[in-house]
Length: 250
Length: 256
Image (cartoon, rainbow over all chains, first blue to last red; front, side, top):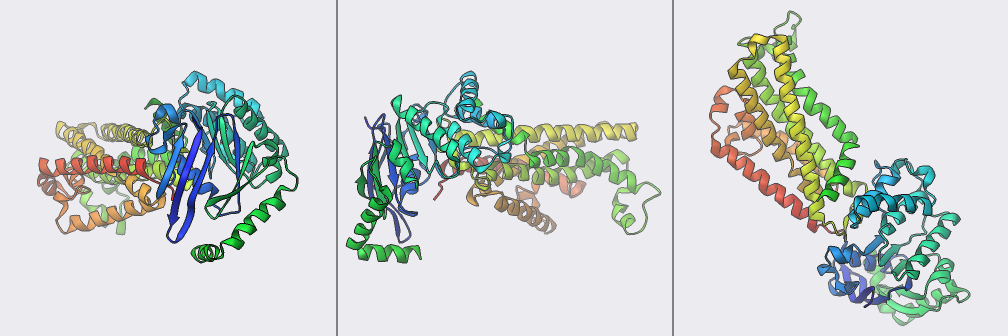
C-alpha cells in the first residue's frame, strides 16, 4: 500500500490549469521531494491531498483510501503543514501542541507527554509558555512542525518547511523528516532548497506547469543547473502551452 | 466532541473580543436600564438629555426599568453574541488557521458545533447574570419596586435575550461565506439597522430578528402584547435552521 498517491490530477482555476494530469506517489519509509518554480502546482497538489481544494478529475489517495472517503482512523495517521502552520496566536506553544495532538487523535495524557517531548526535540523550551503570537517566523515554523508531527503520523506532507528556518532549524527539521521515514512513515516534501532536498530525499520529482516533467537523482552535483535544464527543455517543447499559461496568469 | 470543545474554550476564553463582549452583555443591561430610569428621575436631568429621558420619568419605577431592560438586552444580545460568534468563526480565515482544521480525525462539522456551543453557553451565562444583576440593582435602589409583575417581565426579558442570542449564531454563516469576521460584522450592523426600519413600519411581528425584542417590551406594552407564540416559534425555527446551515457551510468550506 502506498502512503500517498495522486493520479492524473487536474485542477483548473478559470483558464489556468494549476494541475494538468499530475501523478506522483510516496511509499512507506520514503522521502519524496517535489521541486518546481512558483506556480508549478506543488502546493495545489498538496492542497488537493488534504481537501483544501477539490480535483476536477483524477484521484487522490491517503494511506490507500480515497481522500473523500478517509475517516478518522486514516486521518489520525496524517500530519501536514501547508501554507500556514498550525498555531493559534493566543495560545502558548505548549497548549498549541497539546491541542494539535488531541485533534489528531491522541488522548489528553498522551498529548501532554508528546508536547513536552516535541518542545525538547525542536528546542522550543525557552518559548514553551509563551503565546504563539510572540514567536519569530522561524519558531512558528518549528511550532507548526511539532503540531503536525507530535502524533507520529504514518504520512507527513510538508510544503516549503524550511522557508523561515535558520540553519539550526533546518538541521532539526532534517532530523525529524529522516526519523519519520526511518520508522516507516512516507514523507512528501516540497522545497526550494535543492541542496537540502538532495541530502535527505530518496526521490526527487520535478513539477512544472501542473505536471511531472522529470526526476533528478538525489546526491547529484549541481542540482539547480539540472533542474533548470529540465524545465527549459520542457518549455521549449511546449511553447503553445507556455504562452497559454502566461496569458492565464496575466 | 470534547477535543473540539477544549480547543474552542481555550481560544475563546483568551480572546479580547470575548472579554469585551462579556462586559457588554453583563454590565450594560443593569447599568443602562436602572441607571437611565434613575437619572430621568433625578434632579440632575436637564437640557436636551432631559427630553430624551422623559419617557422614563413617570410610571412605576420597576416596570419602567423592566421595559427598558427588554430593549437593552435584545440589542446587546444580538450585537454582543453576534460579534463573538463572528470572531470565533471568522478568525480561522483572518488568522489563517483554518487550513490546519482540514483532514483531521475531528471533523470540521464537530469543530463548528463546538464553536457555536461554546458561544451559546457563554451567552446564556452572561444574559442570566445580566438579568440577575438588573433585578438585584433594582432591589438595592428601590426594593419595593421589584414586584411579582416586574420579576415576570424580567423573566420574559431573559427569555427574549436567549432568543436574540440564538438568532446571532447564524452570523457564523456570513463569517464562513465571507471568509473572515469583517463580513459578519457588516451583517450585524445591517441586520440591526434593517430591524429598526422594519419595526418602525410595523412589520416586526414576522421578522425573526425583531419579534423577540418586541415581545420583551422594546416597542412598548401594546406591541409586546401583539406578539403571539407563532412569531416566537418562527424566530426560534429560523435560528435553528440558520445555525444548522452555518455548521454545514463550515464543514464544506474549501480554500480555493
